[in-house]
Length: 439
Image 1 (cartoon, rainbow, N blue to C red):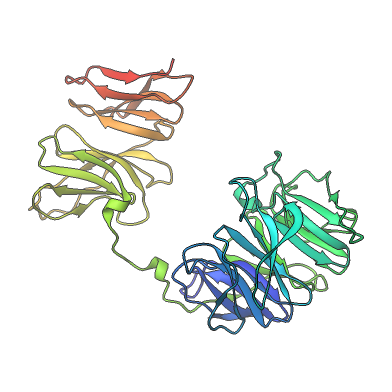
Image 2: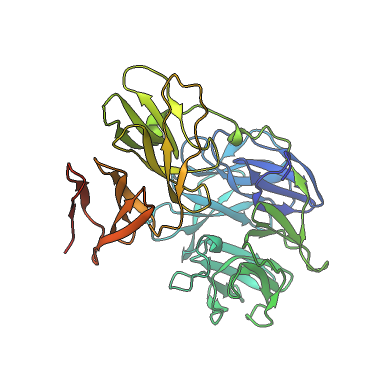
């Protein structure tokens, strides 16, 4: 990536314009790619944009006033107008063909976890109207009829799921309000239906990865149009002629008349505010505290980084790799001259021993000693013994494990078959461990 690259997602298309989300704001770019123009500068996240059929207006979901609501603004930018006041999570789905109505899915008026329902609101304003289709998350109209999407989400968040909440497509071919299941024999999770001519396009992972497919209005003549094998295709939208979708941090454009999808070369000139250094309150991100054996300082884990500081005076010192490594469960050893922590320096979590330097030392911090190759699972809690170089830990497999830091060996002491161990502590001489057990 270059300094002008970003993470592009949730695109929408109308004519020669594409709008997408990057850095929690909306950006506009040509269908040929190029340098994108920032349309919004919101304090909080804007998402699910949808361009009107003529490309002049842009509907999206924002949280400028604290809750998810539907907003509308000119596709050229400018002041956004709030259209809904329902105070519930929602997603803009698209527009009516005449550009008068904005369709959206909302959890307004339903019990939690029951799924959204379909609503519409006039672009000119007014009270929203609930559509009479029950639980549904997508709505598209086209030459082949009206299609509803039930259980539709983002298959990339639930890869290769095949349970009872897989996405379903239902179609009313005659416009009489009678829907029948489409593609009921497709063993995959479907999402984001869109009409182009008499074919229905959609995303599915029934062949192992999320890709773009199409079928006729009866679910026959299934065709595959993309071949992404490493990352799922996501968030597809269409203007009735072409389809734009997201793959990882990139946007791809598919034109049925032009063959295979193509990646759009997009740049965003931005100061990258989410990557800038900033100061935060450590109390909001405090993950663990351990008191020095002599009670004059503490070891802290804050936002995945280990720190030590005196209780009454002295600076706060960060240890380990400054960026790019996450640390957990930092604990002093009984000599008070070193600590042990879990770190993912190698890509997998391992125990690391870090020697502490005196406060007035001019030496550089020594490299930590890593205990590689130990099968520890994912530790949930860890405590250093009061004597010697040894720790005990409990992991997600409900195992109590003893680790000898000098010999660099580990041993499973016990395992609960019925749930997580309830707690453990060392005896003062470091020879025994007491622990709770569901039995």
